[in-house]
Amino acid sequence: MSEDLYRGAPDPEDLLERLERFVNPGRARIYRLLGMNSIEWRGAGSIVHDSTGKEFVDLCAGYAVMNAGHRHPKIVGALADCLGRMGLSTKTMLSAGEVDVAERLAGLLPGDLQMSFFSATGAEANELAMKLARVTTGRNNFVAATKGYHGMTMGCLSATAKGSYRDAFGPLLEGVVHVPFDDLHALENAVGDDTAAVILEPIQGEAGAVVPGEDYLSGVREICDRTGALLILDEVQTGMGRTGRNFACEHWNVVPDIITLAKGLGGGVFPVAATAAKPHVFEIFDENPYVHATTTGGNPLAMAAALAALDVMVEEDFASQARVKGEFVLRRLEALREQYPEVIADVRGRGLLTGIGFTNASGGLMVLSELFERGVLVIPSLMDWTVMRIPPPLNIDMEILERGMGILDDVMADLAPTIRELV
Ligand code: PLP
Image (cartoon, rainbow, N blue to C red; front, side, top):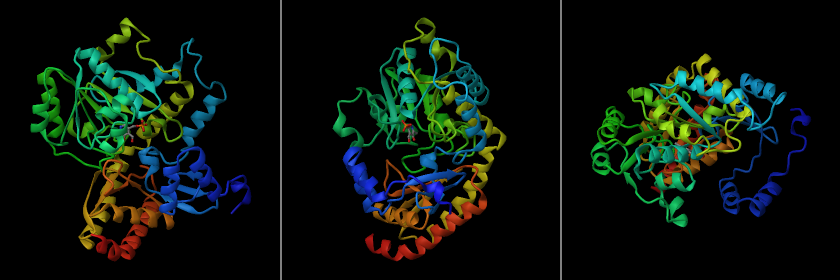
């Protein structure tokens, strides 16, 4: 191990203490409780080293962000090239990047999702989607799904259905109704002539990789068409090849009126989000070009990263990689479920968005913490803590993926007897 690579790294205990004092005491407590006190220091591909040189297999990709792995050379190269000539935007001159990425996206997205607005976060992308739905339809209300996650800003939080995230901040937007996911009957009853849009994840991510039935999304599209509500598909997590198609809506040949992207769109090196829509949904910008704006959205650096990320997604056929490797992961998880039925309730997912449903939340967190100790990164599900998720980089080497899954086998063998006692 070269000492130089780790020079300047802070002491983890000192960092935790400062995290507690200056950033977020609760998070410091959780890191301590789960024994997760390693500092991320170097990442390449699907491997991360902490500040002491300990190696981690990354099976979570920063909550499904590093679809291309850490610091993909082509994406880093594009960013570095751009930084060599331009940082953020003047906002007064023409900027080539945003037009290039919008045109590229229009070519890749299904149907006539032709126009794009760029921002930095998934929440911003959804916030605009909701605003556009209101102005396009002249209606106020939204229908969203139970356990859906759309971000933490006021509008998005209104669509995000978890009390513990919402309760402290009310009142939120009026007129947002939540219905069970994958229940067309409930959706049909909730959508009315005052519904501006139905907003859904095609596969729920933070709910724990919940895949709907085959007819669900086309049924939702039909209800929206019949009632004049727009369909907003939040593909912040499911987009960019993650579920085995470039965009998850393609599994069911459904074209939404508005699609939102983030996470993988920045190639794992820069925050980039997009709200893409059919041309008529963007008509408001014709009347008032600055009716919605953000100072840094669509900046040259972000767009250099996004254009390279889209190229890499296509060149390396991330969708196929996710399909093949996702089947491998699900097979291994299914074997674990058969081996430990009192501990693992179910396994689910599509492509490389996969999850293990534990019979109790403590079991999932124990496994997550022990995996961390043994050098494997996985994540919980924000909307359902009983589900531990495995959304690795899509271009992860099979050998590394097998190593990570092998360590999961070992951890389950060691912890299953204890977790069984907790049930
Ligand atoms: N929508 C979905 C489906 C997400 O999974 C997330 C984040 O996990 C968001 C929106 C919010 O994105 P951000 O955290 O970038 O605001």
